[in-house]
Image (cartoon, one colour):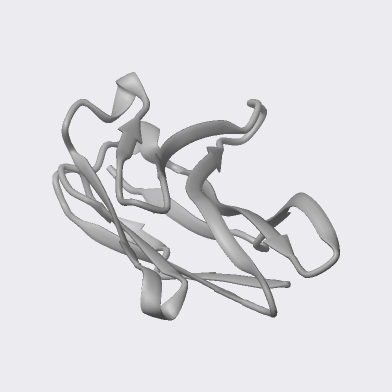
Length: 118
């Protein structure tokens, strides 16, 4: 299973960024989610989306982010608006899946960095 994130970069307060995550392999994807880890802090969930498109967000998102999914491409997106300096973190994509002959499993991408500049 390969999970690849993209779309990170620099952003000033109030600006927007869109992250993408593509998963590939002989798998059936169940849930996909975005996590982030700021320097010196634990990894935390940002948003997750189920196979049927139900989305859940962390409280700190405060309506600023939108997670969406393209099932045909095993891809999810995170549209981030009104970015804050405290959104600075490495953003990781997590994938929950099953594969032939294997029970439920998960995989992470390598992360993409979002840096808020003041």
